[in-house]
Image (cartoon, rainbow, N blue to C red; front, top):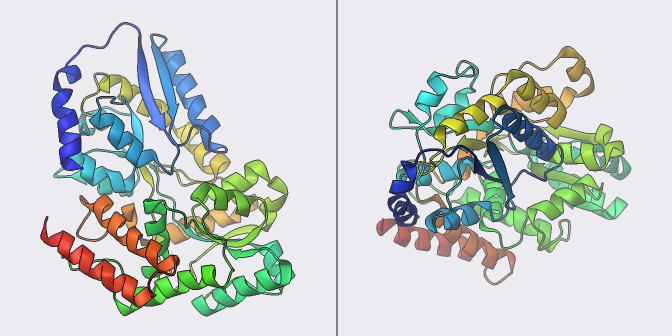
Length: 413
């Protein structure tokens, strides 16, 4: 990836120095343009930016979340460089290492939002320079449909054993899915689901010193658990992230482990279900809530960095950020205090904030010790998980194979 990005940066070095034209198109790709309430919120921000800068026309390009990282990587390497974009947390370190992103410190220093940025901005600070500003750092934890739990005669689980029993009861007594999660061929989401349970069991795929721990007994326990949901037909097979989120929003599943954007999807597409949906602590030993989030970044090769700073002012406006919390039901990138009236009808948001403060885990979807090489690491892990879920190998054998493959790969770095 480093070579890929570096080639693009070298190719476009002269472009970065080009002066902004009097009137031009400002490139802004994102996976969020058509997402529930998030899409309209972002479009409103763009409209406000264009109204204040009539010489600029924003080109809002939609790239699906399931292919966003790969598509952006390919486009930048081919010379199609955005002026501004969101980046998943896991993309930051590789892009900085490749010289793709511009530092935002001067932009921040002269901004109105510099004192309101969340502490999570530290994830995008590398070698003393800030390369991104938080879009959201909402935790992924247990989301449940209380209506289905009540119909099955079970409560909100607090342990893994209770979770399994509740999911089985829902499937047996209601005919709906007990637990839905993405398990198609998408590498990132396959890896994220494994993290949710592996870190929940107190382990991970690696350690900060680079030691590989793919076949740790706790990993075997976690992956065995995931596979059991598929084998026992408690969870549907072969669906992507968007499909399972839609399934939950339609009231066809009791549990998901995901972020608050799912509840926002319920609010927008099936509001009658919203009073039945809750957000709870993970029923795992560590209660870890995997936190991916995203950052606003500006490519180094963009000739329009000053205008990108102007757009950040519009996006991070206090009123807009308040709407992000109270209308989109997500933690925004700057400090916002929810109103008392809002909390009366959205008490679960307080639980989300509590989980975010107490149980953040797996930030950035990056294997410890391999933040820069995360895409390659995740691919090896996901390839072996796919073999396990397909029944080609046992859980133990698949993770032993992953252990060896990752160790061999790490020696080549």
